[in-house]
Image (cartoon, rainbow, N blue to C red; front, side, top):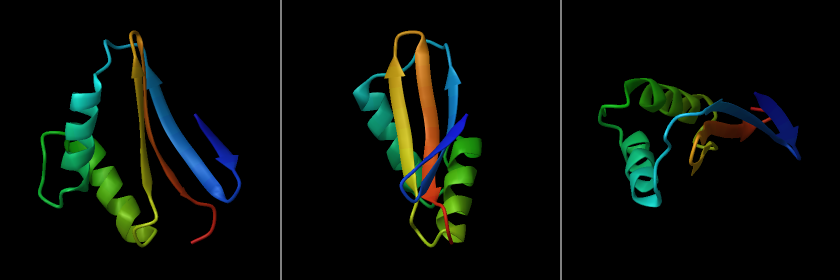
Length: 79
């Protein structure tokens, strides 16, 4: 799903998986921010491409509770 707030577009994917804790969240974000390839190829590629396209103005959104995980990105409405 997606929505806009102020001058940003939020693109999010939600699932009902088991989720992750804060330690795992930090590790996933660190792997995405690393320019080296990680085990999370899809997430890593999307993040790196958005960084390039939006000149670094990209935020990763990760929220997890039991049976609900949301992962996505926030990008500027205008490039």
